Length: 412
Ligand SMILES: *Cc1c(COP(=O)(O)O)cnc(C)c1O
Image (cartoon, rainbow, N blue to C red; front, side, top):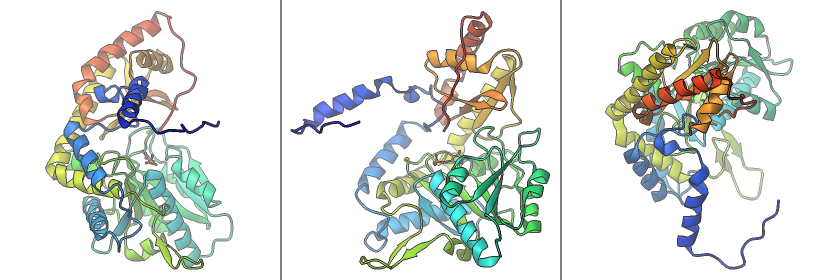
């Protein structure tokens, strides 16, 4: 689809107006009516993100020697992440462009570690619960690996025995999520750790959506089971800054238990006319703004700030939990963080979803079981009663038979 570039440039004020206009049909996330794709931690955090991002927008994380400022900020962000996730003095990591980048690089490291340390006779494979994020399949596709998605247990968590049976001599990685995106539930990482140790396989914890909320929810007094480097066979962890870290988009972290494991991720090439080029992550050029905004938001909020923002999230989740149960829904498992999914025994949830969409709500769904899915932000604490009222009205519309259901839903 070609589009001719305008011959003459336009006035920025006009362009700005047009851009605002173009956004008018988008999901109403600023009002708290979106519970997927966007994390809304309030105006003050947004302002810090924006200003800190633009301060280093032109700088490039690819050149640590040119921009020691960014290198320092990255090291501090990684250090804070590692401290939250029970890393030790040997642990290390890097900022990546997002969860998919973090996961891809962890898979690459695990594969190269396996190639260097054991004999892999057949096509290498990854053993993961059915609920893991498709980023693992994308990474596997690029590296010609097989992903063995093992059905989850009745409690919707990783089925450790079934995963055990799926492991063979060519398994390069075992995965658990903390939590999984569809169910918002933390897999039994300690049991997966015991399995990884027994089978001598690399264990990766995908804490993309949990890594920057679970430690604070625990500090707030919730009994979160061990899920990070505290479990001693966990070799790598992915944790997204641009989700519950409330940082600007384009920022995640990937962590390794020690420097030796980390080295399997690094790409080092000098066979070209440009000289030696070392890139730890998938990206070449790395936006300085994503790094500086992450550093700024973490220091702006601090532990107290995150504890307080995340308390709003878990309060909102509890309010939704109580409310939807009264409306006849069954909450999937016992969510502890910011994601909640709920099915209905009598009413088609996809039809309810469509009614909610008409009322301006942009949320998500799960397919098995069929359930409504919310990924909550601090702002949602203010809108839970509106949400529940709309949900009640939507159920009544569907019950009255005045609707049809959505056939497809989009996922993040
Ligand atoms: C969001 C998410 C990812 C992928 O992260 P992106 O930043 O969207 O690439 C991976 N795993 C889980 C559990 C996620 O929630």
